[in-house]
Length: 259
Ligand code: URA
Image 1 (tube, protein in one colour):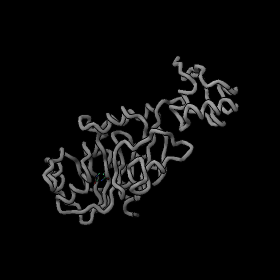
Image 2: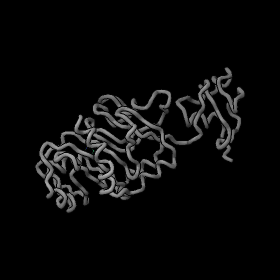
Image 3: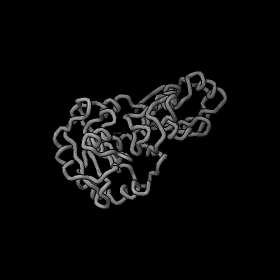
Image 4: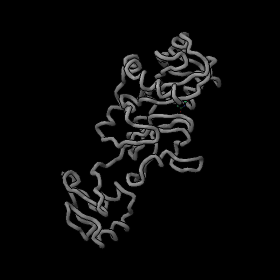
Protein backbone atom coordinates (compact mmCIF):
# COMPACT_ATOMS: atom_id res chain seq x y z
CA UNK A 1 0.00 0.00 0.00
CA UNK A 2 1.37 3.46 -0.92
CA UNK A 3 -0.54 6.27 0.79
CA UNK A 4 -0.34 9.73 -0.77
CA UNK A 5 -2.41 12.92 -0.57
CA UNK A 6 -4.94 13.15 -3.41
CA UNK A 7 -3.76 16.60 -4.59
CA UNK A 8 -0.10 15.51 -4.52
CA UNK A 9 -0.96 12.38 -6.52
CA UNK A 10 -2.76 14.43 -9.18
CA UNK A 11 -0.27 17.31 -9.37
CA UNK A 12 2.66 14.90 -9.83
CA UNK A 13 0.93 13.20 -12.75
CA UNK A 14 -0.86 16.06 -14.57
CA UNK A 15 -0.41 19.71 -15.45
CA UNK A 16 -2.91 20.81 -12.76
CA UNK A 17 -1.59 22.97 -9.92
CA UNK A 18 -2.65 22.30 -6.33
CA UNK A 19 -5.02 25.31 -6.39
CA UNK A 20 -6.66 24.13 -9.62
CA UNK A 21 -7.08 20.67 -8.07
CA UNK A 22 -8.80 22.22 -5.04
CA UNK A 23 -11.24 24.05 -7.34
CA UNK A 24 -11.87 20.98 -9.48
CA UNK A 25 -12.60 18.91 -6.35
CA UNK A 26 -14.99 21.53 -4.98
CA UNK A 27 -16.94 21.37 -8.26
CA UNK A 28 -17.14 17.57 -8.13
CA UNK A 29 -14.78 17.09 -11.10
CA UNK A 30 -12.51 14.66 -9.26
CA UNK A 31 -13.60 11.10 -8.58
CA UNK A 32 -12.07 8.42 -6.39
CA UNK A 33 -13.09 4.90 -7.39
CA UNK A 34 -16.05 6.36 -9.28
CA UNK A 35 -17.36 8.70 -6.52
CA UNK A 36 -16.87 12.47 -6.51
CA UNK A 37 -14.55 13.69 -3.75
CA UNK A 38 -14.87 17.28 -2.57
CA UNK A 39 -11.73 17.32 -0.42
CA UNK A 40 -8.31 17.46 -2.01
CA UNK A 41 -6.26 16.57 1.07
CA UNK A 42 -7.53 13.04 1.73
CA UNK A 43 -5.04 10.18 1.53
CA UNK A 44 -5.40 7.60 -1.21
CA UNK A 45 -3.66 4.30 -1.94
CA UNK A 46 -1.83 4.96 -5.22
CA UNK A 47 -1.39 1.20 -5.81
CA UNK A 48 -5.12 0.47 -5.76
CA UNK A 49 -7.31 3.56 -5.92
CA UNK A 50 -8.58 4.85 -9.27
CA UNK A 51 -8.55 8.63 -9.59
CA UNK A 52 -10.16 10.55 -12.46
CA UNK A 53 -10.08 14.26 -13.22
CA UNK A 54 -12.82 15.64 -15.50
CA UNK A 55 -13.68 12.06 -16.48
CA UNK A 56 -10.10 11.08 -17.41
CA UNK A 57 -8.39 8.40 -15.33
CA UNK A 58 -4.93 9.33 -14.05
CA UNK A 59 -2.25 6.71 -14.49
CA UNK A 60 -0.88 5.58 -11.12
CA UNK A 61 2.65 5.47 -12.56
CA UNK A 62 4.77 8.17 -10.89
CA UNK A 63 6.88 8.97 -13.93
CA UNK A 64 5.93 9.03 -17.61
CA UNK A 65 7.99 7.50 -20.39
CA UNK A 66 7.29 8.04 -24.09
CA UNK A 67 9.13 6.54 -27.00
CA UNK A 68 8.85 8.92 -29.94
CA UNK A 69 9.72 8.32 -33.59
CA UNK A 70 11.11 11.77 -34.28
CA UNK A 71 10.54 13.20 -37.75
CA UNK A 72 12.89 15.83 -39.18
CA UNK A 73 12.28 19.47 -38.27
CA UNK A 74 11.81 19.02 -34.50
CA UNK A 75 14.37 20.16 -31.94
CA UNK A 76 15.32 18.26 -28.78
CA UNK A 77 14.58 21.03 -26.32
CA UNK A 78 11.74 21.83 -23.97
CA UNK A 79 11.03 25.24 -25.50
CA UNK A 80 10.24 25.98 -29.12
CA UNK A 81 12.64 28.95 -29.38
CA UNK A 82 14.77 27.14 -31.96
CA UNK A 83 11.89 25.51 -33.86
CA UNK A 84 9.17 23.00 -33.03
CA UNK A 85 9.97 21.14 -29.80
CA UNK A 86 9.84 17.32 -29.72
CA UNK A 87 7.41 17.72 -26.79
CA UNK A 88 4.78 18.66 -29.38
CA UNK A 89 4.94 15.03 -30.53
CA UNK A 90 3.24 13.97 -27.28
CA UNK A 91 -0.55 14.28 -27.66
CA UNK A 92 -1.80 17.24 -25.54
CA UNK A 93 -3.97 15.01 -23.34
CA UNK A 94 -0.88 12.96 -22.34
CA UNK A 95 1.52 15.91 -22.00
CA UNK A 96 2.35 16.66 -18.37
CA UNK A 97 4.69 19.16 -16.78
CA UNK A 98 8.32 18.21 -16.31
CA UNK A 99 8.67 16.19 -19.53
CA UNK A 100 11.97 16.55 -21.39
CA UNK A 101 13.89 14.61 -24.05
CA UNK A 102 16.38 12.20 -22.42
CA UNK A 103 19.06 12.55 -25.05
CA UNK A 104 19.53 14.42 -28.29
CA UNK A 105 18.92 13.95 -31.97
CA UNK A 106 19.79 16.72 -34.43
CA UNK A 107 16.95 18.74 -35.96
CA UNK A 108 17.32 16.83 -39.25
CA UNK A 109 17.75 13.39 -37.59
CA UNK A 110 15.01 10.81 -37.29
CA UNK A 111 14.01 7.97 -35.03
CA UNK A 112 13.99 6.77 -31.46
CA UNK A 113 13.88 9.35 -28.70
CA UNK A 114 12.84 8.88 -25.09
CA UNK A 115 10.81 11.65 -23.47
CA UNK A 116 10.30 11.42 -19.74
CA UNK A 117 9.95 13.35 -16.49
CA UNK A 118 12.17 10.86 -14.63
CA UNK A 119 15.35 12.83 -14.00
CA UNK A 120 17.12 9.95 -12.29
CA UNK A 121 16.54 7.60 -15.23
CA UNK A 122 17.67 10.29 -17.69
CA UNK A 123 20.83 10.71 -15.66
CA UNK A 124 21.47 6.95 -15.81
CA UNK A 125 20.94 6.92 -19.59
CA UNK A 126 23.05 9.97 -20.30
CA UNK A 127 25.89 9.22 -17.90
CA UNK A 128 28.99 8.51 -20.00
CA UNK A 129 29.90 5.79 -17.46
CA UNK A 130 26.88 3.66 -18.39
CA UNK A 131 27.69 3.30 -22.11
CA UNK A 132 24.11 2.71 -23.27
CA UNK A 133 24.50 1.43 -26.86
CA UNK A 134 22.60 3.33 -29.52
CA UNK A 135 22.13 1.93 -33.02
CA UNK A 136 21.65 4.17 -36.04
CA UNK A 137 21.01 3.52 -39.72
CA UNK A 138 22.49 6.08 -42.10
CA UNK A 139 22.16 6.86 -45.79
CA UNK A 140 25.58 7.87 -47.09
CA UNK A 141 26.49 10.14 -49.95
CA UNK A 142 29.18 7.73 -51.23
CA UNK A 143 29.37 3.93 -51.06
CA UNK A 144 30.32 2.25 -47.80
CA UNK A 145 33.91 0.99 -47.65
CA UNK A 146 34.86 -2.08 -45.62
CA UNK A 147 37.88 -0.21 -44.18
CA UNK A 148 35.40 1.82 -42.07
CA UNK A 149 34.90 -1.26 -39.87
CA UNK A 150 38.47 -1.19 -38.54
CA UNK A 151 38.69 2.59 -38.48
CA UNK A 152 35.53 2.86 -36.31
CA UNK A 153 36.74 0.01 -34.08
CA UNK A 154 40.05 1.76 -33.38
CA UNK A 155 39.16 4.97 -31.55
CA UNK A 156 38.59 7.23 -34.53
CA UNK A 157 39.83 10.83 -34.11
CA UNK A 158 37.35 13.56 -35.07
CA UNK A 159 38.34 16.91 -36.52
CA UNK A 160 39.02 19.05 -33.50
CA UNK A 161 40.96 16.23 -31.85
CA UNK A 162 38.27 14.35 -29.88
CA UNK A 163 38.75 10.59 -29.78
CA UNK A 164 35.75 8.27 -30.08
CA UNK A 165 35.22 5.09 -28.09
CA UNK A 166 35.41 1.95 -30.23
CA UNK A 167 32.26 1.79 -32.38
CA UNK A 168 30.73 -0.84 -34.65
CA UNK A 169 29.70 -0.25 -38.24
CA UNK A 170 28.47 -2.52 -41.04
CA UNK A 171 26.96 -2.13 -44.47
CA UNK A 172 23.27 -2.89 -44.86
CA UNK A 173 22.69 -5.94 -47.05
CA UNK A 174 20.56 -4.33 -49.73
CA UNK A 175 22.39 -1.10 -50.52
CA UNK A 176 26.04 0.01 -50.64
CA UNK A 177 25.06 3.46 -49.39
CA UNK A 178 23.27 2.30 -46.25
CA UNK A 179 25.10 1.42 -43.04
CA UNK A 180 24.37 0.58 -39.41
CA UNK A 181 26.44 2.12 -36.60
CA UNK A 182 26.53 1.31 -32.89
CA UNK A 183 27.87 3.98 -30.51
CA UNK A 184 28.41 3.72 -26.77
CA UNK A 185 28.53 7.48 -26.27
CA UNK A 186 26.94 10.64 -27.65
CA UNK A 187 29.31 13.38 -28.71
CA UNK A 188 27.93 16.37 -30.61
CA UNK A 189 26.95 15.35 -34.20
CA UNK A 190 29.01 12.23 -33.58
CA UNK A 191 27.79 9.92 -36.36
CA UNK A 192 27.98 12.67 -38.98
CA UNK A 193 31.47 13.67 -37.81
CA UNK A 194 32.71 10.06 -37.83
CA UNK A 195 31.68 9.58 -41.45
CA UNK A 196 33.12 13.00 -42.33
CA UNK A 197 36.42 11.85 -40.78
CA UNK A 198 36.56 8.93 -43.25
CA UNK A 199 35.70 11.17 -46.23
CA UNK A 200 32.01 10.34 -46.51
CA UNK A 201 28.86 12.31 -45.71
CA UNK A 202 25.64 11.34 -43.90
CA UNK A 203 22.59 12.34 -45.94
CA UNK A 204 20.00 10.81 -43.61
CA UNK A 205 20.39 9.55 -40.03
CA UNK A 206 17.83 7.55 -38.09
CA UNK A 207 18.26 6.12 -34.58
CA UNK A 208 16.64 2.72 -34.35
CA UNK A 209 17.47 1.59 -30.83
CA UNK A 210 18.38 2.85 -27.41
CA UNK A 211 19.91 -0.09 -25.57
CA UNK A 212 17.48 -2.98 -26.02
CA UNK A 213 14.58 -0.59 -26.63
CA UNK A 214 13.92 -0.97 -30.34
CA UNK A 215 11.79 1.38 -32.41
CA UNK A 216 8.67 -0.70 -33.17
CA UNK A 217 7.91 -1.13 -36.87
CA UNK A 218 4.35 0.02 -36.18
CA UNK A 219 5.46 3.41 -34.80
CA UNK A 220 5.43 5.84 -37.74
CA UNK A 221 7.30 9.16 -37.94
CA UNK A 222 5.77 11.68 -35.55
CA UNK A 223 4.04 9.00 -33.48
CA UNK A 224 4.67 8.25 -29.84
CA UNK A 225 3.90 5.38 -27.47
CA UNK A 226 3.78 5.39 -23.71
CA UNK A 227 6.06 2.90 -21.97
CA UNK A 228 5.80 1.26 -18.58
CA UNK A 229 8.65 1.46 -16.11
CA UNK A 230 9.43 -2.23 -16.72
CA UNK A 231 9.79 -1.59 -20.52
CA UNK A 232 12.28 1.15 -19.76
CA UNK A 233 14.60 -1.37 -18.09
CA UNK A 234 15.29 -2.65 -21.65
CA UNK A 235 17.44 0.44 -22.10
CA UNK A 236 20.11 -1.24 -20.05
CA UNK A 237 20.29 -4.37 -22.22
CA UNK A 238 22.86 -4.53 -25.02
CA UNK A 239 21.51 -6.12 -28.21
CA UNK A 240 23.81 -8.24 -30.40
CA UNK A 241 24.73 -5.72 -33.11
CA UNK A 242 25.14 -8.19 -35.97
CA UNK A 243 21.96 -10.16 -35.22
CA UNK A 244 20.09 -6.93 -34.70
CA UNK A 245 21.17 -5.50 -38.07
CA UNK A 246 20.44 -8.75 -39.90
CA UNK A 247 16.93 -9.03 -38.56
CA UNK A 248 15.96 -5.35 -38.85
CA UNK A 249 17.86 -4.44 -42.01
CA UNK A 250 15.05 -5.08 -44.53
CA UNK A 251 12.52 -2.93 -42.68
CA UNK A 252 14.71 0.06 -41.80
CA UNK A 253 16.65 0.00 -45.09
CA UNK A 254 13.36 0.29 -46.97
CA UNK A 255 12.45 3.37 -44.92
CA UNK A 256 15.71 5.14 -45.73
CA UNK A 257 15.70 4.09 -49.39
CA UNK A 258 12.23 5.58 -49.80
CA UNK A 259 13.09 8.85 -48.01
N1 URA B 1 24.95 11.62 -34.35
C1 URA B 1 24.68 12.68 -35.16
O1 URA B 1 25.54 13.11 -35.91
N2 URA B 1 23.46 13.22 -35.09
C2 URA B 1 22.46 12.75 -34.31
O2 URA B 1 21.35 13.29 -34.32
C3 URA B 1 22.75 11.64 -33.48
C4 URA B 1 24.00 11.10 -33.52
